[in-house]
Length: 141
Ligand code: CMP
Image (tube, rainbow, N blue to C red; front, side, top):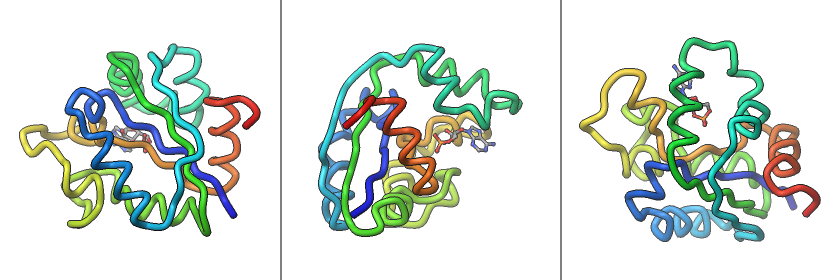
C-alpha cells in the first residue's frame, strides 16, 4: 500500500469540483484516508513548493495558492503515486489527455502561464515526495 497527496487548488474549490474530482481517484482504485480544508500560509506553500521557489512562475503560483481555500487529501492504494499522477494528467492542462482531471476540467479561457498555474490539482510526483508532503500538510497520520 502506498499513499499520495492530492491538493484541490482554489480554482477547483471555487468551481465546486471536489465531488467529481474525488470520484476520479476513487475509480482508479484509491481510497481517501484524510481530508482537510484550509487557507494555505505562505510558509506552508514555500515548504511544499521548495523545489520551485526560485523559478520565475513561483510568485504567481504562491499568490494563486494563497488566494482561497484549498482541500488537501491523502489517497491510499496500490501504486497510489503513479495512479494519482495518471488520473491528474499533464501539468499543462492543454496537454492533458481526455479522461484526466486536468484534461476534462480545464478552463479553456485561460492562456499561457496562468493556465498552467490554475491546473486545478496538485499530485505528488514520487513516493518520497508524497511522504514528505503528507507530513507537511497533515503531520503524523
Ligand atoms: P503542481 O503540480 O502543483 O506543481 C508545481 C506547480 O507550478 C504546477 O502544478 C503549476 O500549477 C505551477 N506552474 C506554473 N507554471 C509552471 C510551469 N511553467 N511549469 C511547471 N509548473 C508550473
